[in-house]
Length: 126
Image (cartoon, rainbow, N blue to C red; front, side, top):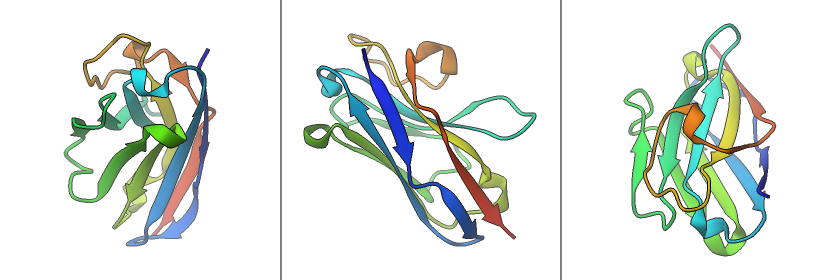
């Protein structure tokens, strides 16, 4: 019912910036809590940031606080992840995800998200 397509990934140097976008299709985008996750080769998927349905509540992992900003534009059915001061440790495939409609808590575990994009790779060189 909800399709997510990420874009904006690429290769950047340490200290650089990147803005990821996630375009959503489906009914009532504003009904879904959204999150950004990342997964490096050989490692588990982890939550980077998440945002409530209206955008009034956000979550950031400690390593991303002050560097990453999640936002959403419900009128455009799009969620963004602005990444600044990128570090080599940020290298991973980044996924956009949506919780099922009706769920309101901003969670961080992958199993609580029902819909996933295909992922966009981000590589930060040192």
